[in-house]
Length: 249
Length: 260
Image 1 (cartoon, each protein chain N blue to C red):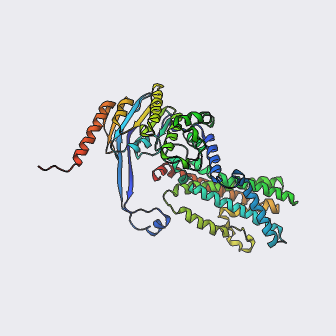
Image 2 (cartoon, rainbow over the protein chains, first blue to last red):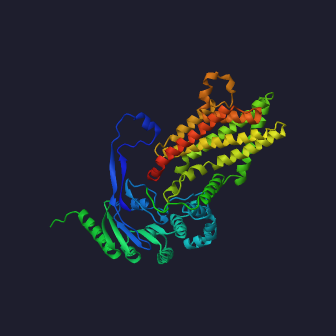
């Protein structure tokens, strides 16, 4: 990723309908530009596990979506030499009228798996998610945790060469997290490249070779995972101190 | 976005298309009596009801009766497929933010239910024409299939454009519902086009269902083939709609996830 910038336009007055556009056609529409990422550059090497840390609103999710090809950057380039499988916002959104098997096929084919691969992997995916008993249950009856587990299980099965993960180890119970961690290590050993976002310094230290620290849409530090985890904690501490009311003697 | 070596390439478009069609089909008829069978029964039932009703109203004009049924079904296809196409990207928002894949597939497959219904209706209609001793010629049947293909191209172009515009204009579906209701009377479905002055026929033909309905009636019921010029104009109309739709889609689709 080289020199990537991204902004969003936030209008002061929303106009979402044909009627509003027609009625206010000649009226000025003030808007504010929200710069989310500025000149972000980094490289994810083959077989590397790269961590991404930053406070809420620092631009991590936008950066991941650009890396995954879901958002288009305003400037800069994303050069890819391998196929990407993103695991983003996976707890959100399924087709609630379909059962787990149909939803597995829907999400799996979107992620590039063939139907033959998916049909052969139904049991493995449901087993990974711990949902074998609920294979024929419509997703409307799933809890959000069950839905998220199912989605992660599909995505972990769909991994091709590069895996992009957003807060993966914050989902599910201890047993599910253990399976995710084991699968992550297995993929890493197999030479897959990983881009991992988390707020947890322990996860960064344990699972990443290298890390980046994002603040205000810019990379402010990069280096060894442990050092970046410490820098992130220091950033949080400084932020907390700055927001504390002054103590008067 | 410049990407190298196919990092965003989707290796399995065929499987994706089939899964979207199959799950759309399953979702639509889920929970209704007969499940999937309902999809097969619906056009047949509708056809029989209309045939029964119009057998009493227009006893002496069988051509009008069957032409009316054909027009109603074709217009129903237009309304249904354009409505689902317009709403397709928003309806599948939960997939668009998960991974990068060719989103045009979502728009095109969203029309599959309407296409299946039209195909089944066409089979039933042809069977009925054979049964009443008015079988269309092979050329007529092939031309009818060609017109439907062009109709599909028109609706696809329309859907590609409106599916991305619907992200910005959230009442576009309501505007389109009103337009298609008014358009029902622009297309000569319940009235013969001959009752209108010839000078305005050209404008009626600009509304795509008009040409498709009239041409389909010509080849299947009246057993006459429209002129070559008429065919070329229909093809031009279909190609233009598809090209404009694809252009707007290409322009705006990359930003669609930002609206979700």
